[in-house]
Length: 115
Image 1 (cartoon, rainbow, N blue to C red):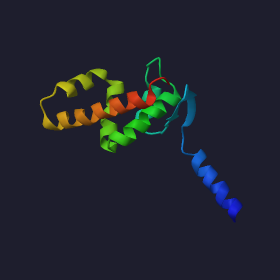
Image 2: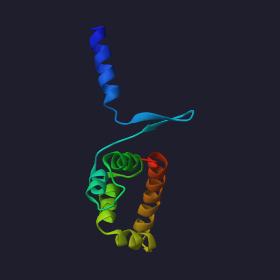
Image 3: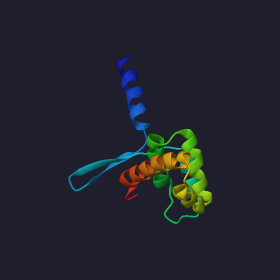
Image 4: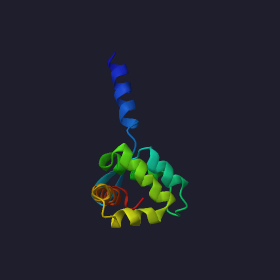
């Protein structure tokens, strides 16, 4: 029974996504997730895209954006100008969304820089 518990615990930890890397004396974990933003990222024409980066960006989105916000943000990959329109909008719902989106972008930059 103890062996089964150890195997299950190891499988859960291994399935958490991400991994580690040493940079000098610092240790950091790269988070990865799948979802609508990672799919849009992979499908985009951006040259820096790769599964690790797109998964990390999705992990940041999961922490900062609701499912509806994520679906709305996916449209920015298809039409980057729409992001500018939302950012400059006078509508309170757009301003609220943009504040959440800006927090997501800041988190993604912190989590995913260097990937």
